Image (cartoon, rainbow, N blue to C red; front, top):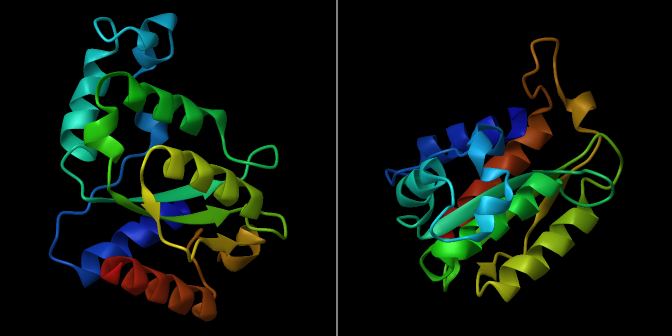
Length: 165
């Protein structure tokens, strides 16, 4: 969440457009059942998330942590849930950007590639500059803020690029 919040703050400082953060930690518990695959039974709380965060957005930005050499399963589950009722309204012809984060040396490059393929399949245009943040834990101070000045400059430039995209 540290990197996602850093992006959120940077976006809010650089645009007057509405910017919101949806953490997958906040997905409703009742989304994680077999009922998710039935339009009539999918979580009503998830429907509210679609209406508030996803459908009105013309761009989506993903901060994706590395998990088992790719991205977390909850992200795939989220994409699946979006596909049940509102796939076209959420994804079709939208633009997306992304950043990968890992404590290792690759910054989740494999996960970014994998997720790009999924978004392309969903008819989303992905900004080519997908930024990996490697050894992220080493970029933080004791209060868990990004201390590395160069990293903050790169993040800011990435936000500028995405806003122009």
